[in-house]
Length: 434
Image (cartoon, rainbow, N blue to C red; front, side):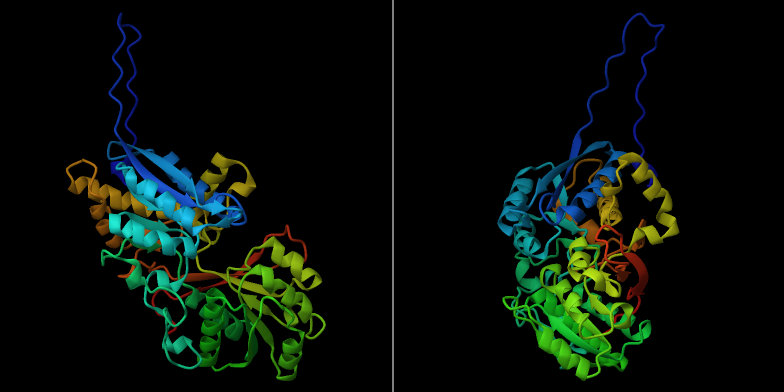
């Protein structure tokens, strides 16, 4: 990405070799600090470390902003292999205590975000996330009426989640994200199943968690509104996990596909069990969300029935955008290892670009000084039409991305090491499915 001229790096002063005395070193530039909080160890590190690399790459290529050296203050919110909300809260408190930290990038996990947002909000610290997709982080409605099979809205409180309005004690928004929401993931899977795979009847399974139930409900509501039907819904007991009887009933009801809302741990074994009931492979698609997408554990669990697994991810895959090719090439040349680049690398790169743009405007308005944190937040809220590696970037009034694109992938076979193939995108940027 080409960046605005105000971010040009100041040239180094070179001492004249012919002079008899050395030129005094220029005074050190003041620093501007950006916090980063991601799960850098444990299960989610597979996606979060490449995201951190995207942030680092942007800062490496834009090390100075309006006369300030940009410094990253990085923290890990994982404990015992999983994102930890208490640790995330402690990390944010430390960032707030550092007066030089102007804003933060992160987190990756909705549970961590739910603990961090009120703390950061009370302190006026802006947050921009490259990964969270739970609707209740930015609004009070979990599932809009037209995406609920019952055609009534499900509020966040009814889903057992705090609504966004209760996460913001200062009554202003400080939380922004470049991922779209889970209800659009479920909708996109329904659009793809109905329009591309010609699925009209589906069985639906959820994992008894809010994330999985939200995916399942939005898939069901969207498929129904398109003219299809859900012939059965099982909210699976994770302690049991045996869905064989349900699969047999779905076969009898004429289901052409199974949609699963949840994560890999309970999900992809369902795909393996389908082999004894339904035609294997693409003959009976198995669809899900980002809880299973691109996960080698999923393909390992599905075994010989891995083909025909389709999963949504609530972001733009920058590798499919010609405009991002140069940036991706430069990143890979800089970082070398193939594992350094991931699905969220360019989303995190864009999150950094958005923050730089807001900081640039705030610094200029402050006469070249470090601005108040509240001013940075206000400038982030004004983001619109910014060209990024993942598309045109901006936020709505709630802090959600206006670049509402869901990418769909397919597992290509039983080899867990094989990368999944991008097969489609569903774009809700100009028109929502509800």
